[in-house]
Image (cartoon, rainbow, N blue to C red; front, side, top):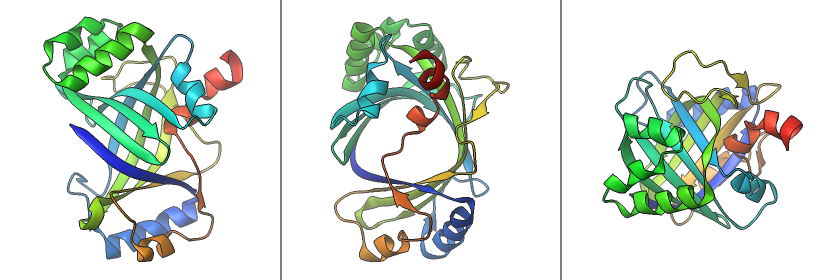
Length: 230
């Protein structure tokens, strides 16, 4: 599956989080994947031994990429393997579903497990990971509330309680010790859409304490590397 999207991110305060939450519950439809209003997402990011993707993001390069495993339940038997590419303001996300056992193999840098999949995305990711000797670098959890509007496939998410581990990469464990990505309360509001964004949504996003900026949970969560190892 390949998805082409535009994406805008905002850092918001706790006050604005609840203000937007109440507003979006009124004017948008709640994502059907939300069981009780929110759900937890876990992602394991990979990078090269030289941390090429991290430095590409931090230096603001126009063309960059990230590779990650993603799941929504640690007891699942299927995991998303995703390649995200950013070209200026546009996002292209390629996804292939792999088995939990193959995800464990990738964590151990056994890239050959991807050769059994027929999807072109699996082959692309195999080439990138094997040539770059990608290995896991950070495990991230966060709680998401998601909303959508059918026009232009607009999707708005509120992500909070962002936490990470740079030492434990057990994707399927319930007992990973994680630390907060922010030192004070912050949440991330993301707007993803095709084509143009409605003016009324743009006006809504002009709220207090909201700043449009290039944010990355991946980079935010690599604080240990950034402070002590870089």
